[in-house]
Image 1 (cartoon, rainbow, N blue to C red):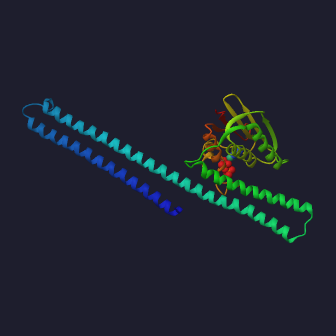
Image 2: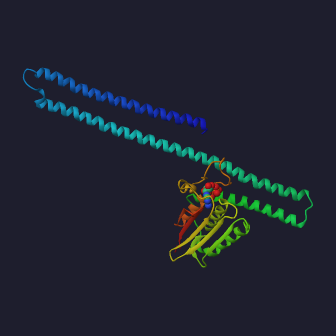
Image 3: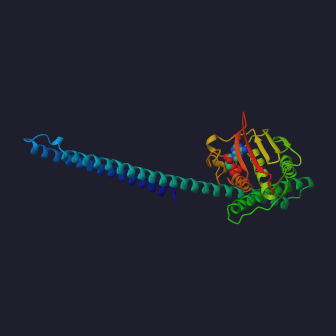
Length: 329
Ligand code: ADP
């Protein structure tokens, strides 16, 4: 829905709600006044009638009149409060749904923008590499360099496509894991080394990967957890920042901690970053490229393995993503 139409609906919704509330309060006031005037009318009339014989207020008829007046008054209060509560609840619910809808649409728009960019830039760079190879007579060293760059672009495209596929698969009802007794230590070390080689000199890497940690897990899904967490740690930290990967295990669980000394994640964003398409900031303020799918996939994979994931601050700077997965049977 376009923004201007959404604002009009938003305004219309508030005006309708305000109108309902004001007219309800007005009608409540009128009913209240009616009840009061009715009571006082009868009271005055009866007091005049009783004038010569005694005090009307001392009679059982007055007690009944007063009881009726009070009962009606309490009924008006009670029903009014319930009605107000219900319109308040309805208002809050509709407002919340509306806001969620806006956030979702924004995230989807952001996703489309980012995905277009993520597809465009490696494709443009690939095209350039191929054109250079085609047009110029290059020596072996140059060819190697350009092929290396082209392969990097292809890897970037591949990981993007994989993430999109994963994200759509993971929520479908027939998604199932292919669990096997996995050597988590070997798999984590392999991914760690591959990434470390790629970013050699740009980040400081520390690994503490315990040997022979095993669990029943899906190899591809688990690899995507390790890969996404380490890639994020690099992406969201500056040059020369320290990235540390720790893997340990006991008889119940395996524990994977990926820490960085980067920009960190504010407390109010710590839950949201696991939502689909969610990225901190806006297109204007973001300096990194991405789709907001990585952590969504990571969280779902971990949950499919009955594990947990959470993020804590890495003091004095950065974040630590902590994953724990039961060893399984
Ligand atoms: P993407 O990296 O493609 O944007 P992710 O789902 O992997 O998507 O991450 C979602 C958001 O969480 C990122 O856009 C970023 O704002 C934040 N984030 C993820 N990892 C880190 C990290 N290690 N440090 C700081 N922010 C992070």
